[in-house]
Amino acid sequence: MKKKKATYSAAEICSQFDVTKTTLFKWEKEGKLRKVKKDWRGWRVFTDDNIKEIRNIIQGKKQKNV
Image (tube, rainbow, N blue to C red; front, side, top):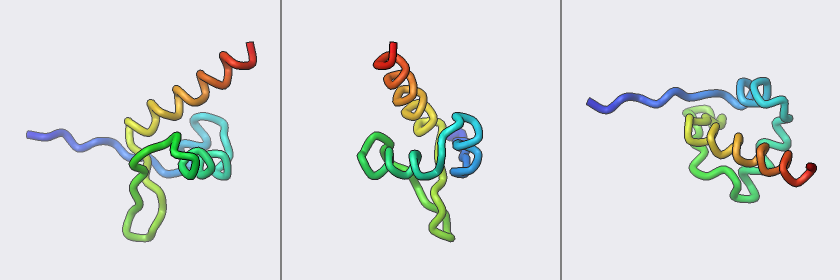
């Protein structure tokens, strides 16, 4: 049986990682976040895979600033 992945709203992601929606959507537009799905309302729905990508983006930015 396939386990359903957890999903998160843009607001939840922004709160968790302390980024703005503008930043989040910019990363998506730049192709840094892949396969961001949308729900029936057209709102973005983020998965655990997207969270891993976001962590990598933030980690990369921290390493550049060191």
